[in-house]
Figure (cartoon, one colour):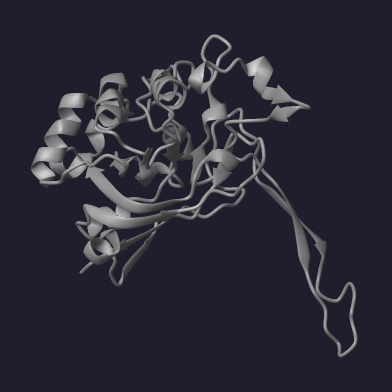
Length: 268
């Protein structure tokens, strides 16, 4: 049914390129790549050579999904699991990103700047409330169904390479859903959420990532994975609200996140 309704010839890549220039929160491991073997280092029969590389980076690099093991509250993960019990032989034995199921289903874009008529000067540190999201849903004339993936576009992606410090937002703050906005989404039964920022949630100016109530609500209390650093501008420019989403995490055992290359398909 989803394929029939939403599958189409318009394809949107929702990921950002991964390189040493990809913005990161300060405590994350930066991207590094080095070639282990270059063409010509070893030449095989028939004058054939190959090239390989070594990559080092944090799993929360570029477009990625947060696993439930990413956040704890008072020493407990989702389902009340004690962190000490889940950590076995130096890695998370459950709730790692390998447990995040591949998602192929209905996606919904909530384009906050468009439907609330916001411009760039309105964005820094702006919280997206439950009333805001309800207004966007009503004005976009879209229905949020149980099991949907819901992506909230803030418009903040404009800073990702032009002003990466602003994009990270420790000084400027970051627009995104506040706790009541997040609760509205979980009450609607969403399967996962995402946005075009590094935090998904609202970060007040000057506070950085010191407070993450939305992460706690989604990952610990509700068991809803979070996708961050999505490229949503192309979907918005094409006025796409509903789409077929294919989102497949790498099954990295015990990791708290996985890089992604989500693809959206929309009918014409």
